[in-house]
Amino acid sequence: MKSAATAPGRPPSSNLAYSRAVDGALDALFGLNDGAATELLFVRHGEPAYSAAEKHGDDDPSLSERGRFQTIRLAMRMRRIDVEAVYTSTARAAIETATLVAASRDLPVVRAPQLRDIALHPAALNGSANDRRKLQAEVRVQLINRPRWDALRGVEPTRQFRHRIVQAIEAIAARHPGSRVIVVTHQPVINAYISMVLGIERDMFFQPEFTSISAVRILRDLYAVQSINDQAHLLPTFAPR
Image (cartoon, rainbow, N blue to C red; front, top):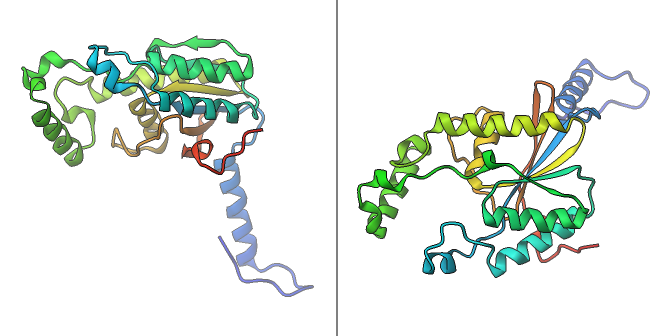
């Protein structure tokens, strides 16, 4: 918020004083720089080897070559900051991502099953999964028209999914007051939690890049989003130290 400049020697105008007061309040609201605040760094796992997994009928793929490259770059970046703990979902790609990141900080990896991806129930599709093009078209139309999981057949209901995710993440935050924690998980999980923080009804409101970082600070009943989809470590200009 900007105000007109005040001439030298004159007291600040009421407009400037009010502007400064608002700026200070916004800093307090969104900065949450109190030492008791917990900072959660949500990381989407590295790119999985989808093609190889599909070829072998594997529903839990490991990282692809590109995914390992992304994760190594992320680990290089994480070496620069203080982190108290690394949590991960139990998916293979997430565990591999978390393991490489944790090794850069000499930390153990804590597996949290509740951070798993949204549950899919293919049996509810009544065989339509066999027609891939038809299924893709159906899902695309449904999510574009109504970006909530309740719009899709055979998917964990929105309310149930959000409740699971919020409970799991709030428990992690409560265990690490005043500390920074890395949470390696999935695109829907990150969307679900940040949607709760921002009061967004959509289940999916952005698409995090693989290994991107989205940061949230928590101080008692206050929440502040610090960044969304930060992927600076994937840019050619990134210089690891």
